[in-house]
Picture 1: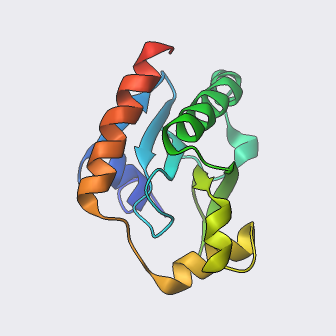
Picture 2: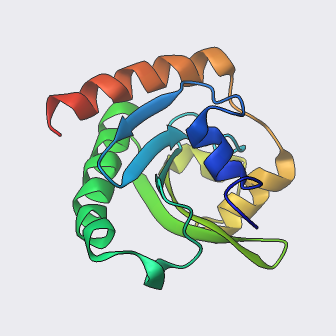
Picture 3: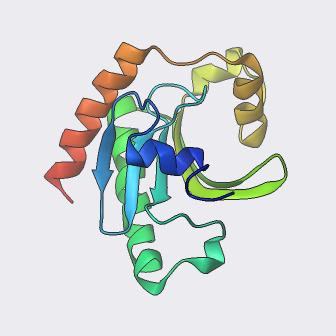
Length: 153
C-alpha cells in the first residue's frame, strides 16, 4: 500500500470525506474523528507521514506521541464522561500492514446492555453491528474537541 492508495492518507489530505474535519495536529501527528462504527467521540491519532510500523517512528514522532495520546484521551473522557477511554494501535487491514493509527474510544458502562464483552470484543461487535454515528453529532463533538485541545496544547 502506498500513500496514494492509503485511506488514512487520503483522509488527512482531504481527498475523502471526513466528518468533523481535522480536529488537531502537532508537527508529526493528526487527530481526526473515526469514520468507523465506534461511536461519537472515537478519535484517531495517526502520523502525518505514511508509516506502517510503530517501530519505524522517527525519534521526533515518538517523542510527541505519549503526551498527545494522553491529551486526546483526557479530552475524550471529559467531553463524553466515559467510564473508560480505550487507546489501542490498529495497523492491519486484510492481514496487510496499513498506516498506523491509534483509536481513542470512549466506553460507557451502559454499553454492556448491548455488548456483553468489553475491550477488543466490544470493538469487534461494534464493527459487526455497523451502526455508524450520526454525522451532526460527530460534527458537534469535533467542534468541542477542537476547542478543548486548543486550550491546552
